[in-house]
Length: 167
Image 1: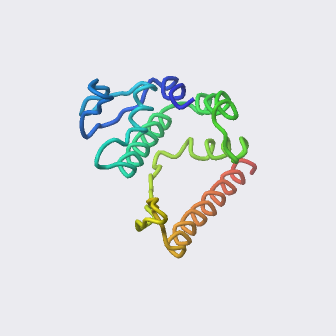
Image 2 (image 1 turned 90 degrees about the vertical axis):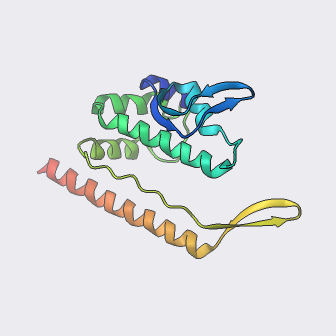
Image 3 (image 1 turned 120 degrees about the vertical axis):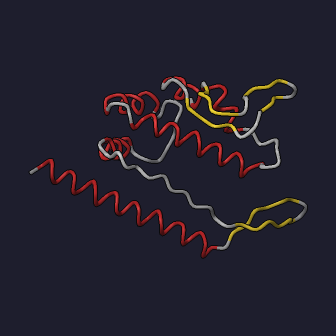
């Protein structure tokens, strides 16, 4: 489904920091380019280098931001069509389609979308021969509170927008 979504929007623009190989085969060349769905999936899954999971996470964020940038320039109708096509048809989420639709409508006119990310500080520990990344609960609680505050601000913004429409 990931590949289908990427293909349905004409690909995603990325800036590969290096060449990506599958065995001896060059799959993605270093530099700015548009990736189709298959190559984008390879790009976000790749972890066979010194950056391992952190590099993979960074590439996943890059692809999501590229997709969001594309969606900023598409019509509300096109965005809702994407949700209608893929919601519970390859993408499973506990978010209700009505809430997703509300957020799309709310953000549709917002040209100043800001992308924020927070990295939970972890520390490595080997337990019974297995490698774990562990975290402090206080750090997780702090990041959770940032998201809760953002959610409350977004809901307030949505309610104010609905009041403007109703009056």
